[in-house]
Length: 316
Image (cartoon, rainbow, N blue to C red; front, side, top):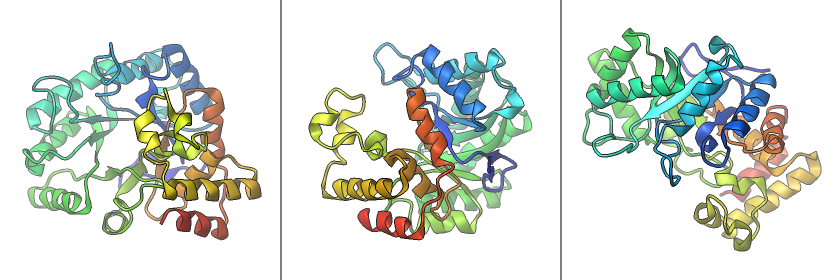
């Protein structure tokens, strides 16, 4: 397995990161264990989650995904030092439980550690920008957690180029840990927010990039061709939004590359990301072993320059 260095951290991740947002939502505990077992058995090593996963599901309170991962780790199904655990802080977990104030970050980290049943988080991310909190305050909290050994590395999600640069400047000025990893939304359909200044900044500053919504909520698997296909799905409204002229062009390009390579649409969409400038690894979820096969196979798929040009053009 070809491991990729995650920015300036000492973490080496396999080419695909498993998206744990499905745990406790569209994958129950038993299914989640089977998926994690198979993922690690295939040589992959990184799980992405967040404290808020999956608070949006009726009956869930948030922390559901972390709890499942924690139970799985506790069973010793993989050695803790062989697993890279990414989680996040900042999304609303309840009244007065959101944002990036220092006190809240410290409390939220403790809660995540308890749910994950581990003594450290490998990579801790600010989930969303918090305009009410200076970068210095948040970064100081992360510095304290690092000193205590409770987190190893710090990153962020959903920052634009201006916000990320401001955080780097604040870290340098105050002598605090900087964000070494970015998690942006990026896929064949949604490209504008990452390509350009943000990608340039990440490359220049050696910031690792792990992309979310890498399969556009399942749209890039090719199984949604009409609005009728999306009805009753967990992400019905989001997936339906991709069914415009641009989305249909992308599906046609995926079909063409699939016919030429014998690969599935999901494998091609992830392999496209793996060749994009600045990207370390895409995050992708699966709710069945069949879907997991596509994630595994994508790491072995090498797209030709012609295929890349075709796919690039379709999403413009």
